[in-house]
Image 1: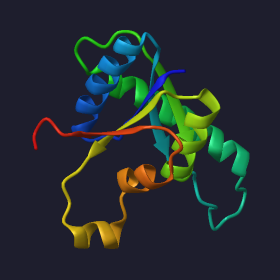
Image 2: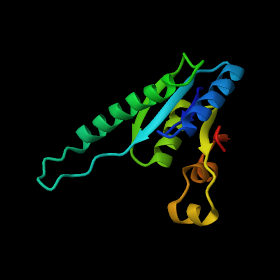
Image 3: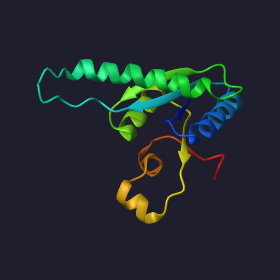
Length: 141
């Protein structure tokens, strides 16, 4: 029953990891730092192998999760996890499979119009996840 820290490549990720580390320590559970990458698209020349592309994307996302967490002071023990596909769907599916105690995400300040046009991973997780979602404001906001 880990705490899942969902991170991207923004500066907001550090605040997410710190908050998730605190929750994991308080609950006595492990920390999984999760980054979701995009799945490749077919090339015009053909030769697209969906499984191969998904595996590559997953590996790259795992490396990114490790890099992001390694940059946070005081966070030494964590499991880097790479997923590929739709961010919200992948995070919900992974959190269910792991029976995560929490999903920790960043809360980006965005005007309502921006949320309506671009959508919000945080908002979608809050509405669709079957477990607690913790939205962490950025250190800079």
